[in-house]
Image (cartoon, rainbow, N blue to C red; front, side, top):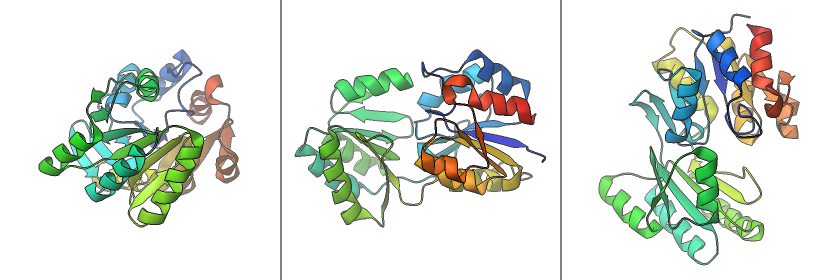
Length: 267
C-alpha cells in the first residue's frame, strides 16, 4: 500500500518508559521524511512542540486536545471549545470535592494551585501552568470570547466516578468525557475526535492524501475511531483490549519501540 502520512498518539504509544522519544524512534521518523509524521494527542500544543523539535518536523501540522485544536505552525485550521456554561457547572461540582481542575485553551494552561496533580502533569508534559483560580479563568474567558479546549479533572477515584456520572447526565449532548486513567476525566467538545481532526487536515492541508493512505498508531479509547478509519490502524502491544481487537496490526509495546519497528517494516 502507498502510505503517505503517519499519525501517532503520544503517551502510551510513541514515548518510552521515561516518557521520552527513544533514539530509534527519532532516527526512524527522520529516515522516512519527507513522509509527514503528525503528532495527535490529548496534550496541549506546547507539550508537543519539544517532541516535534526532536523529530526535526517542526513544520508539520499538529493535532492537540484529541482534535479540539488543529494547527499548521501558528495557523488555526480547526478549533472547538466547550461552552462556558458547562465550565461554570464543572467548577461548582469540583468545589464540593478534592478534585483538581486544569483548564486549557490553545497554549494556556491554568491550575488553581501547584498541587500534586499539577506538578505531576507539568513533569510529564514539560510545560509549566499558570496559577489562577478557575472562577477567574472563567471570567477572563467570558470577556475574551474563549472557552476550554480541554478540561482535566484529577483526583480520588470515587469522587471522579461521581463527577463523571453527574457530567454524563447533565451534558451528554455537549461534551465528550474520556477516562484516560481511573483518577482522570478529560473533557472536550462533543464534536471532537482524532478521526475528524485528520479529516480537517486532509480537507485543508494534505488535499492529495486520502484516509486509506494513512498509517496511525494508538493505545487507548480515544484512538479507536482513528485506527478504524485509516488505511492501517496499528495498536502498540500495551494498548487496552478494545484497541487490540479493532487494530489492523499489533506492534511491540511503546517501551520497546513499537512505532519505530513498524515504520522500519513498512518503509
